[in-house]
Length: 427
Ligand code: DOR
Ligand code: ZN
Ligand code: ZN
Image (cartoon, rainbow, N blue to C red; front, top):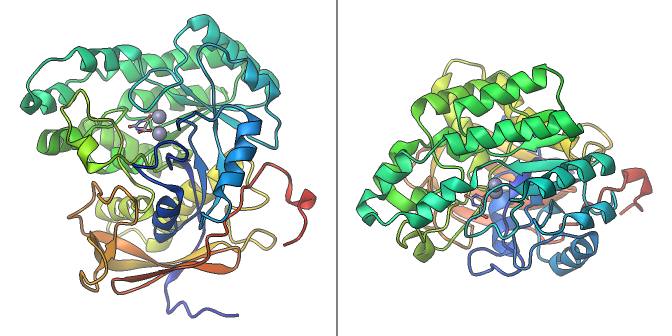
């Protein structure tokens, strides 16, 4: 079979190594079928799902059960990051390399983070066990005090934006410094998620230069919005970690453009409109983003460097959204590029098309529907540059759009356990 690309760019299927698809237990916010449609519409063919579901995902056995539950519902291939409870990190010891190679650790709690490791002795144990078991730790590095402050805050909802604007950035910086100290002591391999401040980027870059096994992630939200957005739309832009200042955003862009950042992750964390419109202290943090990630970051790159060749910008995006996540999460013999021998996952991308996220079919040729079940996007009203036209996973079309019409393929995405492809029976 051949595919006429009409002069568009062919990219490898993207790997989003940071999504909250909300299954099981939180399916009023999002479910796997909707989320996987949003993913393929955004050029993503593989996701790694976060463990803060209900119940949380903590063991290899639970990973097998979850994979079974998802059979027949997913347009994308998937893998899971396990979670770890603050009371008892010992199940980490029993994780086989087949079930997971990575564990998310929350250093602070909030509405959707049930598992928080607060006790310093337990945290040491988590870092030590992970180092011994060869697991990569993914850190949500924020200080609990940050959330405590918000919960105690009794101000007027209209003053919320002010509150968020001054929300202590030190919470994230201190937490990252603490993580680096633990890495020094135990030699644990660590990936710091959603770095949001200039100081974190500086600390993490210096640590990597000094030879510590640390990498970090940046989200499209922190590259696209600043605290000014919180002032404009209030709690709807609430995010953990919070949106920061312009100078932070510039530092994050520099980290992206100079290779200091290892991966971009959407942190797709949908909540219902109703939940986001609650009073500030009750509105849960998080924004959807798996559909928007590629095009939002591409739009930002174009805006910052309009005369840079499109190929250079797309190569950078492929590095951050396919090659590096594949390397970090043991998918590199299966996904992450367009080399022979890898799964035939690819995306046809028109780097020049301008379009908007719209309410759905019939909203005009320059628009695409929001596919997340939550039905809203922080990027509504944005003119995006660069559009996914066609997504193929394992040789089959899973998404195609023409004008404002979208078509999806069969939801036969697979669990990518961490076996080497040579151990896997041919399809
Ligand atoms: O903003 C966030 N939302 N940060 C997190 O760490 C969790 C996420 C969620 O699950 O809603
Ligand atoms: Zn997080
Ligand atoms: Zn997250």
